Amino acid sequence: MFESLTRKLQEVFQKLARKGYLTEADVDSALREVRLALLEADVHYQVVKDFLARVRERAVGAEVMKSLTPAQQVVKIVYEELIKVLGEGEKLNLAGKPPHVIMLVGLQGSGKTTTAAKLALKLRKEGHTPLLVAADTRRPAAVIQLEVLGRQLDIPVYKGEPSLPSPQICVNALNKARADYNTVVILDTAGRLHIDDELMRELEEVKRATSPAETLLVADAMTGQDAVRVAQEFHKRLGLTGLILTKLDGDARGGAAISMRAVTGVPIKFVGVGEKPQALEEFHPDRLASRILGMGDVLTLIEKAQEVMDQEKALKASEKMLRGEFTLEDFLVQIKELKKLGPISQLLELIPGFSSLAREIPLELTDRQLKRVEAIINSMTPEERRHPEIINASRKRRIAKGSGTTVQEVNELLVQFRQVQKMMKEVQRGRLPGFLRFLS
Image (cartoon, rainbow, N blue to C red):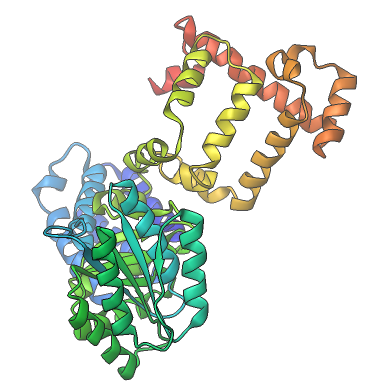
């Protein structure tokens, strides 16, 4: 996410940091580089122009020029102005008497159907009883796809009669939701390859018939400026109440995310950051601005962990680690829990100072390494996992053969594990390892 933009912005700020005292010329030179980085990231030109004007006005003022840490002040200003561009984070409007209707609209291929299922899962975790509605009568595969997702997540799906028009299906679904006491109805409406007048009229009719609390455009962040134009058109015809940006994890530029709120005036409410059902995050402008600047996002990391990890297992494992009793069996449990959080490269992006490392690690490499480690430990006997010191040369050969790896890879894992054990014992004795002493 934002790999290219983050790297270029960090390079600009590193140059400023080496200068110490900043002149107006230094600020202008840095902002020219920021301008290029934003335009290359596909940020709308007018958004870039307005953004840099506000940054410059503050950056050449007293708060920077008289500061003891001028470069840090410039970063702080850029961060604050980025938040203003991204807008305030707004939650779904689910006030009043249920069922609340959420109408999802968008182009074909934007991820609308999968987003409907992800949103339903998220709302169910918050205590709602959602009903998914397959209102895309023009693409039969969309109905089948939603039914499959509904079964996988154990969420009911209403598909209605294929011969009925979409507005009538939505009305019937709403009546069904009232009878079944569903609190939220999510309408997966027909997609389109481009802005089509006939289909837009159908959406207008669906909206009149169901009076949705939210009309959300699902837009593919990877389409850049096109996503902004699409949002403007949909907003003009339907009066959008929010945006959901999908495939943000696959967009190295991120221009659409930065531009859309500023250009359309419509708030971003959710972002899709992966294919898994849990990979839909509430939009927090401050957190996204922090990620763009390579400053990490610890709050999102904590929320991810709380949502998918077994808290009791995690607590027991941490206690065993601090007592120096951590075994390869515990390590295997931790790997399985860690995999629930998503790709390692995405997790590193959320840790302050690690975003550059995340860019250097190929996604497939980290996943492959975790699978290899898991296979090696699974090929061990319970006794070997609890007491790795008994693993001799013949056992290593057996483990390597059983896991489809090499003896060298088994050795590497055992060496790394011993290092972790040693570090934990040092912490228990109150002696911090070298790199931790440095950080403290």
